[in-house]
Amino acid sequence: MFTIDAIPADVAAHLRAGATVVRVAHESPGYPCRQCLRDAEIGEELVLVAYDPFDGLGDDSPYRAASAIFLHRDDCSAERDRSTVPDQLVRRQLSLRTFDAAAMMLDGRVVEGHDLAEALDEVLGLPGAERAHIYNAGAGCFAAVAHR
Image (cartoon, rainbow, N blue to C red; front, side, top):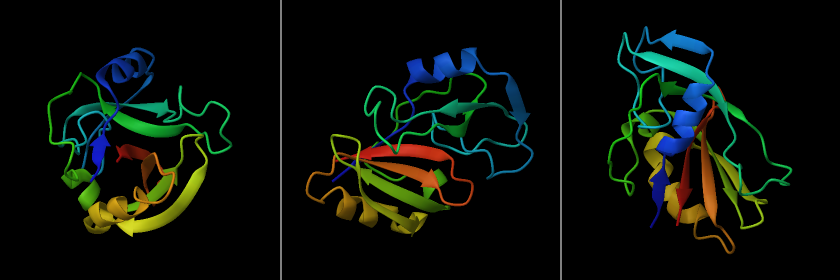
């Protein structure tokens, strides 16, 4: 069993406060917000920021890297079922990277979004697995983190 976590509201607010790049969604899907884990609708404003999923976790990990992400320009936090794969992820090809408690990679693979739940169950069952980072395979943008 796993949970999929979006970027927390406080972190998203901090990122928005420093954002300088604003985009208006002109197609959907195409602008995946990493706070609400849904694709923006045409006409919605988003900010493009850099996010490091290792902040405070693996500060000395050689795998640490910031990634460009979209956030809705305004707070979009909402309750959602963290035990299901959001549609935003189901319809994309994804890169899945599994890490241990020391933020060292245990496994890396590319999966189709419709296979993500099965892949998460598998990789988070590996000995020592603590978390899995999910990225868009094509653009390489961070999408979400999964925990067992």
